[in-house]
Length: 165
Image (cartoon, rainbow, N blue to C red):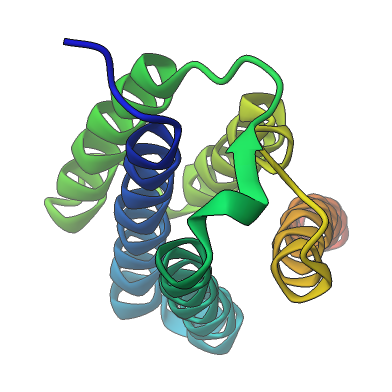
C-alpha cells in the first residue's frame, strides 16, 4: 500500500524528533562525564531539546493544514535511521567510558556534519512561513553547532600545545 503524502511527511518528522532526542541524549551524556566542559555540552543538549520541540510543532502544523505540505527533495530516512543507531551506540560507549573525553568533540562534530548532509531541510516543501522559519532555524543552528564544536576542538588543541611547552 502506498503511503499518502501526509504520512510520508509525518514519518520524516517522527524520525527527526527521534534524531533530535538522540543527539540531545549524547550531549547530555557528554555533559555528565566531561568535567570542565559541562557547560559547553549542557548548552548543546538544551539546544537539541529545543529542536525536538520545534519538530513537534512542525508536526502539529502538518496535521492542522496537510494540504500546505508536500514531499521535497529525496530524503533518505533509512540513512537517518542508520545514523541514529550509530549515535545510540556512541552514547552507550561514551557513558561506559569507552570514548576518551578528548574524542567526544570529534564525535559531536561528526554528528552535526551528518545532520547537515542528511538534508532534512529539503525533505518537505511548503509556503508556510512559520514552518519554513522553524526548519531554517534548525538548519542554521546545526551549522553553528558544527562550527562551535570545531572551535572548541581548536581551543583544546591549542591548550594542549601550550601545556606541552
